[in-house]
Length: 448
Ligand SMILES: O=P(O)(O)OC[C@H]1O[C@](O)(CO)[C@@H](O)[C@@H]1O
Image (spheres, rainbow, N blue to C red):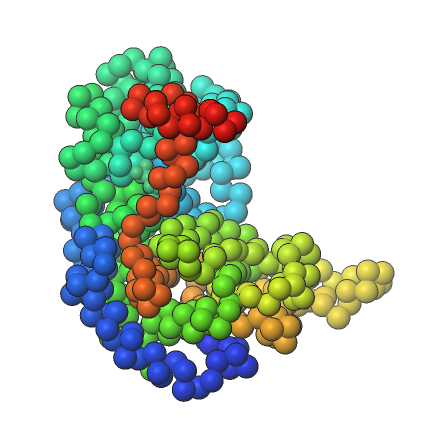
């Protein structure tokens, strides 16, 4: 039985009963394409069977490396951008307490995991170096292509800092490189320098790499159980193998999004009710946006953190343009709870809540918001997971991955490439004077 409850009862005002069933033929066709490798972009569908077909020897090396980092470092700096950091960042936030990174070293069992190379901001880099201070640290540099500018700059900086602190040999034993098996500057550098190296499989595109070494090493170093993460994903792989829309929740989600998209609901909000899920939405936004935004079509993925954003975006969602659909991630069992304090006098008018669990208030608010948004014209779907543990997260990652594969194919695009991201890179390289871009440099400078 599926470990996620997918509840689409709140789309019934927007989608007729027969519409989902009528998607079955199309869903069967795209499911076949995805699994048989006969669809577009099939060279990048290795993630479909990754939870069962991963490299077990490398997995053991990841666990050993995580243990070493835990034993010799107070901080792990994870250098990467996009799919090379969002999955591990999402997982580490999801699996640890919200203020995990604020705990002082003497109260921590595992290293702080901090991220670099996900922007070009010098201020951010300076702040990060300052917060590491004179503490022991290691670096995991992650880039599938091995040529991305942001992580390459950050790696130069941290490699230099490591070498100054530990000497060249000492630095080498603190650098872990996760990259392509054969190609790219990072692969070349790792081989020359003799870093411990982990592989991003060819058949897994950046945004699908959370269950490869890209995600697994930082997640394991943070103290989380990556065996359970993979076990959850494996369970989902088995549970979502049958394309029957009567039972396959991930496929129901993909098909519903497609039905709603065709009716003009062109933006999807992924909403959560726990601050530790904020980065899960960031991971999801890349997964959806980079997979589906092609050929001038696709659902625009956005996110909201409730109840916080009800006091900022709430007005728009309730009352703005009616092109929104909303998917709520609900956690059935809260990580912890708190009872609203009981007071003799009811000065703040909160007497009706006193003695009640905050999880009850949060949950009830969620139900109220779902109904309000549905009444306001926003179709709503709920993805309910059991709890915030590794198994549930692995399951959830797979749920969204398989859904976006199906959803992208249903919309007639290649969900596994990202040609659009090259445009900004070309302009940036040209303006920065990278060799090979001379004509473009002239053309762009004339426009500035
Ligand atoms: O791991 P890499 O190759 O550095 O790429 C990072 C990210 O950049 C992109 O290639 C977009 O430029 C994403 O697809 C990817 O997740």
